[in-house]
Length: 175
Image (cartoon, rainbow, N blue to C red):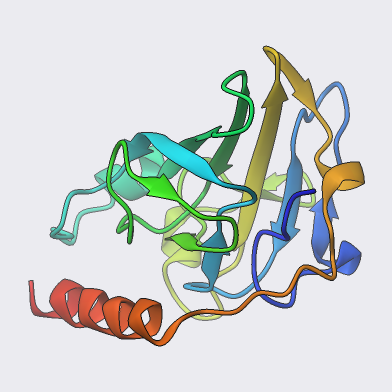
C-alpha cells in the first residue's frame, strides 16, 4: 500500500482524478506543505532550481518535480510535479515511505478549472493553482494510484527530520 502524498490528505483533496486525458491524480493542498514518499524509493530524477533561488521566474515557469523509483519493484515510478524548487533529498538517495521528499507548489504549467493560471497570480498569496500532480507508472503504463493509497497510513516525522527541514528552510532564506 502507498501512503498519502501529504499529512492530512484525504480523498477530498483530489482536485482532478485519473483518466486517459489526465494520466495522474491532482491533490490540492497548502503551498510549502511537505510531500511524502509514497513507498520506499530511490530518487532517480530531480528538476530543481539549485540551492539558490535567483528571483527570476524562468525555473518557476518550467516547473519543478522529481521521480522516485520503487525499491520493491524497479519498474514502478512516482513522478511528483508542480513542486517548489528546493528539495530535502538528493539524487540517488534512498527514502523511506512517509519521508518528506519535496514541498507542495504551483510551478510549471498550471490550470485551474481548465483556465491557465499566470505566474504573476501564482506567486502571490493566496497562491492559486497550488497542487501536486502525481503520476504513478507501473511496468511502463500510467496507473491510478487511488486504489493503492492507505489513507490511514500513520505519518510521523522524526525530530531529526523536523530539525533538518528547519535548517534547510533557513539556508534557503539566507542564500
